[in-house]
Each structure stands twice: as C-alpha cells, then as structure tokens.
Image 1 (cartoon, protein in one colour):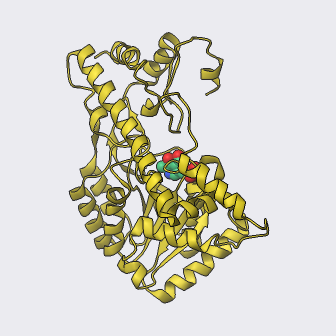
Image 2 (cartoon, protein in one colour):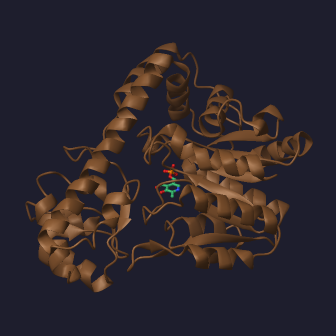
Length: 382
Ligand SMILES: Cc1ncc(COP(=O)(O)O)c(C=O)c1O
C-alpha cells in the first residue's frame, strides 16, 4: 500500500487492497447506511454502556439473515449469537471458545487462506493444521486432497471453511462438494467453523447462506463468524457476530454464558454505532430493500469486471487460460504467477497486488482493463 501511494505514475493500478471500490475508486458509504445513521443519531438519547452480547435486535436479525428465520437450530433454541467487533472479533471469540472447550483440538485452515486466519485462530494457543484447497497454477480446487486430509483429522477437530467468496482464491465449493464435505464432517465428528465475510457478494444473500444453513441442519455443533464490513460497507465501524450452534438447548445456554465471559475478558462489549445502523437497516423494510439493491450493484460491478478482464485476456492471448476469472466469486482471484512476476507487474507496469498474486477485481475499471490485460499476458508468459 505504501509503495502504491508513493508511485507517481498517473495510471497506476491498485489490485492489492481488500476493500470494495466503485467506478470512481471510492469505497462508498451506502445510501441505506447514510439514511439509517441519520435516524439512529436522531433517536439516540444516551451513550451509556450496552451489554457484552451487544444489541439483541441485531443478534436476532443476524441469525435470521444467516440461518433463515425458520431454521431448526433456532426453533430448538440451539443457536446463540453474540455481536462482535467485526468478523475478526467473531473469529477470535470463537477461537477462545474452542480453546476453553477443547484445548487439544486442532483447527484446520484451507491452503491457501486469508492471511489473518492464522494469527486470529492460532495466537490463543490452538494448534493449526492445513488442508489442501486450491492449486493456483491450474486454477482448480484440490478437492480430493482436501477430503483425504480431513479424513485423517481427529474427532472434535475444527475445520474452518469460507462460506462463500473464498479469500484469496475466489474458488468456492460446488453444491455436491459441500454435500460431500458435510458428510465427511458428520462421519468424522468434526466441527465446522464457517467464515461468512461476503454474504451477498457471491450470488445473493439467500443463495450464499444456503450451504451454511444445510451444514448447520446436519451437524450437532457449528460456529459461524459473520462480518458486515463488506456487504454493508461498515468496515471501520467493526460490525460482526459469532453464531454458535450447540447440540441441545441446555448446552447452548452454557456456551452463551461462556461466550459472554470471553467477550468481557477481551474487550468488555462490542462497539454499538455500526450495529445500531445495521439493525435499523435489517428491521426497516424500505431500508432493507435499498440495501439489497446496493449490494446487488456492488456484486454486479465486480461480476462485470470479471467478464471484461477475462474477455480482454482472451483477446490478447488468443487462448482461454484466464477463463477462471470469469467463473470465480467475490472480489478476489489469484492470478497464479510467481512472486517475481508480481514484482515485474509492480516495477514495470505499476500494477499492485499482494505477493501471492491476489488481485481485487474491484480495482479493475473499464478504463484500465486493457492495460491490465496486456501486462498480465506479458508477465505471465501466456
Ligand atoms: C475471509 C475473511 N474473514 C473475515 C474477515 C473479517 O473482516 P472484519 O473483521 O473487517 O469484519 C475478512 C475481511 O477481509 C475476510 O476476508
């Protein structure tokens, strides 16, 4: 980021950031957020403390959004939700919960995965393992190797799975693959920890939640870390939640009080402002409709850039080796080139991405797509 900022080249391209950008390169405040925020501020009468669990109406709305209002886990009172400081806060509280409940359990992360997963889950002392997930040079999932690795996990181990829009690969499990993973988790008595940071960025709010709902229907226990940084654009307000599903209502109650204890021992209570805005949007039909429209527009823009870039690459290279960009989901894909090629893209072409060659498609604009495609073709040797 520092190198990008310091580069005086007028047409430099930033594909390295982890946030959404609109066609003016802004990370916008959504209109629904502006409206909800005005209402929240007008109605607010105190800045007194909230509770460690955060806002009750927020937690209920998150459960409905992620699991669906009529999910059996909710009906049976097996789900408990804690408002958390962003998806990161939810991941960390979840990690602490696992550490307290099953100190010897290993947590399996996908290889590759988002760079913050290892510190967020490992620094509390949990043992981390990796399962093969994606081959960056062939642009394919390593699904058989994934199943084989998880087959060897011990009962009670935890498997972290990106619910949709895998970061950094953009490669998600298909419906039959989700089914096979769920079968394996059930058979091997493994616990899913689902990281839901991009609900609505894949296909829609409902479709992106479908695999999560199905996993939770089948298994006795699950953790879900939810983030509203991307889909509500509330990044710095730190809005997220941890949903924990337990095998029965009594256990869920015990888990809930332990989650509250963990929250108190780390940060006492979550920040309120962003969650108040989110709850206002979830609970006001007009604002919610506006949100869905704005979310559709963000997803549409990224999808359009995927098609545009893949199309230009096809024209420039005369082949289809970049077609994976077309079919993957969310903001990210791995270009699948060496560190040296990433450096050349930066030094020669002023195109910036992370050293693993992760590109953020929201950094592509109609006026830079040809330039980027030509540089990609030149430096990847295709
Ligand atoms: C895979 C993944 N999980 C979780 C998060 C959590 O984000 P935040 O703590 O900003 O809500 C992110 C954000 O980039 C992410 O990419």
